[in-house]
Amino acid sequence: MNTILPQDTIQWQTQEETVQDVIEASVHNLIVWNDDVNTFDHVIESLVDICEHSPEQAEQCALFIHHKGKYGVKKGSFDFLHPKAEALIDRGIQATIDY
Image 1 (cartoon, helix red, strand yellow):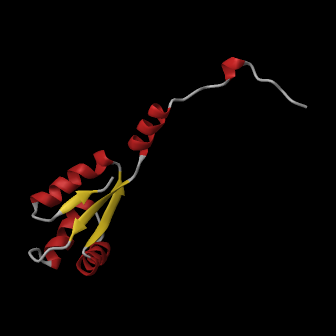
Image 2 (tube, helix red, strand yellow):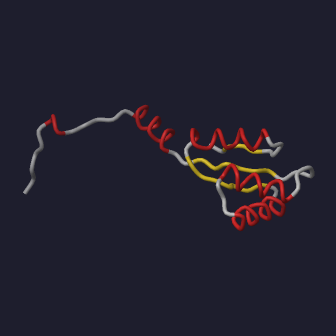
């Protein structure tokens, strides 16, 4: 049996609205890049202070950064990650946020 729904029960959503929702809801990565300047201890201490990692988690991240050249140390919204990226940069650590 087919049921016909009244026209007012169908809600249309434009592509523009959908794209905006996806951008706002998307999860980004805070990426820390390897360099030849910062020590392991400095990177680990910074990840503990800024990203609220445990010392063990920060050490693992530092090893990934060293061996792979970069590593996503934190996930979240752009607004959540931006101050953390700025704080890492203020400490001389190269950090970016992916899109």
